[in-house]
Length: 338
Image (cartoon, rainbow, N blue to C red; front, top):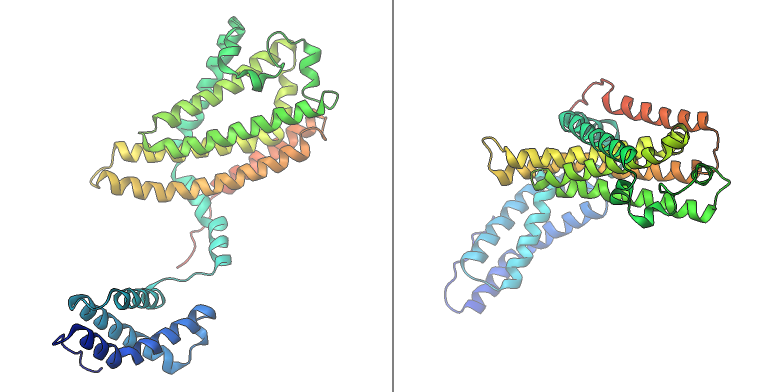
């Protein structure tokens, strides 16, 4: 390694001499990194691989001198970028995208879901509590229905509707456009609940809890409307095709938000900010999977909503989907090696 020049005399001349003395090494490092970035480290020969750490240390030394002697800003920026690129290849872990995706579906997602099982149980209980509360209130006083269900979502599905009108909303005999709008609105609402239940978890989990209760209330309100007309079983089948996946996604999103909220409230020996960051990274894995589940629910809803009118088939599809999700998340498996 050539000795670094001291910053003496005219700063411009010093910068020029400094660049002339070391630019060859920088350019060589840049060329090696460019080959690695465009192809891979395997494209480098043995000499280039051996030179990479040496050139990296030289570039770090040059960067240190450039900063201390206040050389031109452009040179400092160039050296910082060069050193960062070299650091990534020397110390960073490069995992192919397909391998990362495989790792996510085979291990990371299910492991993250299992890690939040206490919060998942709480989210489930909150949803059930909301369901029961709304069902009891509306069966005793139907006016509560309008306090829980927005008018645009109800769209005629309210206590004034007859059994025949309500049944038409569950099968193909009804208005196809109206059914499509209702189903789309319901799916959009559930997706928003899932996202906000996760995103608002930092507020000690309170907004997430309220959203889970409210979503349970909405389900309870619809059952309180259909059951007295003898249509509870039919409503359950209509919802089951996509609802088992959709509701589980909401519960998991709420659980992820509750984990963040619990960690913020009780950070332990860590700082609250660090604890929240760690919980956020783990919960984000759960939420990434929730997005996949909502996509699957959308496909199931689009395919089966009105094309399948048989209640037994509807329940079979919904039950099979739920069973597969539970097996995927909670079936014991070996941890990956390495």
